[in-house]
Length: 318
Length: 265
Image (cartoon, rainbow over all chains, first blue to last red; front, top):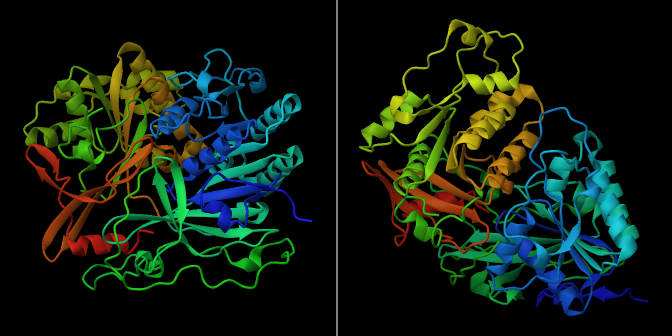
């Protein structure tokens, strides 16, 4: 009996996911900066509003007023998406006692978000922690059921609200809270230019990775499904385009494949092992959960060919 | 908001969205301070108030370099946060630090003059104390453009005072709430690490310089820019006596392009 699948709202992506995302689970959307994570996550939420669902965007990187103006610059109307401002306040270096933040920050509709950044309150410096965030989410879910949630970004959540020593346990508990709430969650993860696997890869049920690279003529974008527990999926790199109507995923043609480039001899080689144009996917042996029955081992995600003159692909976006 | 750098506004498809923090990165000598001064100068030309937070070079050196460019930068305000000679200090409250460091006009910058007492009492500069200093400054003057030169040095200086990442975020948040458009100068980021200011900033302008067969190639790339389309290709630039000029229509040399692709993902 197959579990219900949730459509992502990204044409081509649902096909890669063999129908969509399994409902009620948490997934990572990862990539370096400018690869389109926030755009994709917002498209996922908008798909929910189109079906009349309640959806919420948890803002950690950029304040809601900026997210709103950035997305509206694409021509999208996100008024019906709800948003929770979890961006950290300006620190108050006085040692005054803190008030419980959940009394001050509320979930609102994007259409009610003001055009300017929220000012940190002078009187009661709110001390947001991961526990208060979990409490807010639980409270909100008691009064109305959200079907979709986006945490943008999990990286900021880790950096600002989780102490390094407790990172693994706290993260796992956060993922557990999300799954107890029954929401289908997308959490964005910022990758450094050369990345290594991290704890999120273990704990999430799946990872969608966004890529961008130069092919001599311009910028090309791609997507891979790094992992998807409980479902078969397309393991190949596919092309990603950011159009006026949003992100669209396509098959890659031969001449669009990323090229392998070696540094010239007179220039000092920087990182000899980055001739591949995307970070290597996390090794499959690191998954702690038992591997579910899946399609047979996929071919390697990228075929590398020396093709410097691939067709130009422009692409702009968040 | 215009950057004041010809050609760069085109790469940014109109300029920078105001009120947000941006990173200007690059190796030493790539032109970051020059670009930042140009940005501040552009503000002053338009009647805005502009502030340079000087950590790497003392104001007098910045003034000399800028004079060599032939610019009159008298109206750019400068906050001298250049660390004083290491001196052992007794505990001084942060408010006193803020009172001691003063903002002067770039024109009037002379060698740092401090009384004996101040020299003895100066504690280490930190992200925390900078936020307090800026708070005082912004209460008096409505700056719309601020440059921190450099955030990298600020982080290094703050290492001893505890959680720098939180402090940096607080500083950026503070500047945004004050509706300031800020340029934060940093060294080239380590590609294996995630630095919070890099992913929190709303854009990154990266300056490059390469020696390609006895010639110095300079170019600029927009590594990221939230909320706006931007030029995805790097473009050549020159540093002239009028400052930096970018050619947004030309492509960089093949050799330089290859050197970029060797470690870009």
